[in-house]
Length: 500
Image (tube, rainbow, N blue to C red; front, side, top):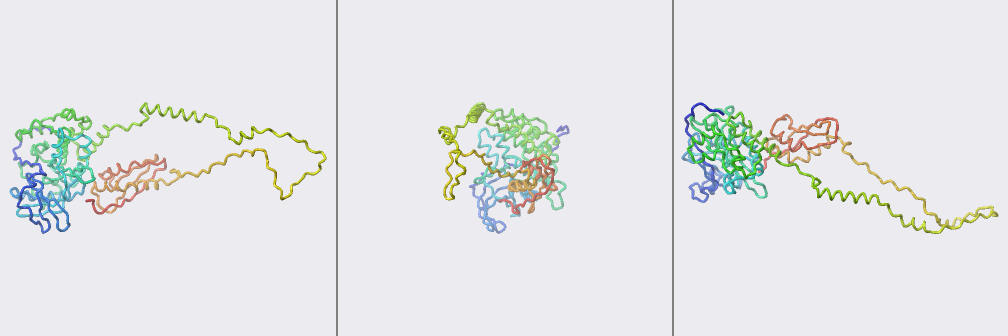
């Protein structure tokens, strides 16, 4: 983004990272207070530039919750309105990588939000405790890609976060579960103009900028309007910091704020692979992240979901396909030896049976001439048994084995086969519905089978949507033998209550 006009004059309102370990043991006048008649404050568990976080006991539900309390000294009308807007933005999106909000209210000329209590440090604290303050790229993507989907859901509701950084991503650690990145602190979330009404909180005063300077987009630094592409830039800065161990404009750290902003507006960042030569960052991954750091918002990925999909595609390109063990020459030698043994066994003649050997070694009896005087043939009496025959029994052809007709998948109704496959993937479909914040008791999935037996799916009536893309990843792996093309609708029953 080329900016040739003079820099506008504005007042910066920097936002500090939330320190989830600050003042945890410090005495506080809030300890022991009861809010809204049900939440008893137990301890302060975090503190930032705008708010304090407390652990509280919910007397009605019997569980612990987190209460975010706006600091009284900055609790202006605008900031209280922002607290309410944060609660609204978080409450409208149901996603496992977004902190849930249970309620909001006012207390002593300030405001508070009641949220789910999540155990774990924020991502900035995790990085500072690691060697070189960075994560391997595979681990970083596995952690952040779901959080990017949560941000996309926020954007789809018409909100822009405006303060994405490692300090606002909590690494929740639950027993017997992998670490989960949870987006927190929507205190600077701003509603799209199309969603504003008379009840909306006031916008930031002209000439004021609310942001964290090190993660501000060029348009934020210039005091201009922002949209979801500004969050894409801030998330790219976050990824750069996680993979390289430092932000892209590290040389501006500790310098005046206008110098930091100038770097975001005018300077090109150091190439990611050069910033951490020993981090083994694939060029494909670095290229996607650097594209999201473009000065011009139009040159970046236009949505957070597009950014995430580009990272997934690059990661797949960097993952080698699994090699067959037969590609290795030791295995090839073993297989060749086995083939030789099998052929030698097949070509060895079978030994004669003991019965045939005994008969062939027995001397032949002399043939007696018939008695010409005998005119009748002696017939044995009914009580006498026939003499045993000395001739070997005539060889009988072996009985053909009873072959049961195999039920071929080709003789089944293709739609029945596919329905059984789809029914076995209900858990994965439920996860797609949770990620896409789908509501309702059931989900209708349109299923198409082409002439080659390939199966494709999408949510009925929403072919190009987040849930359809998720369904394609978990369902479009079913194949059957070639058949006539057909289509049908498969219904999944969903949970009506979200997972805790």
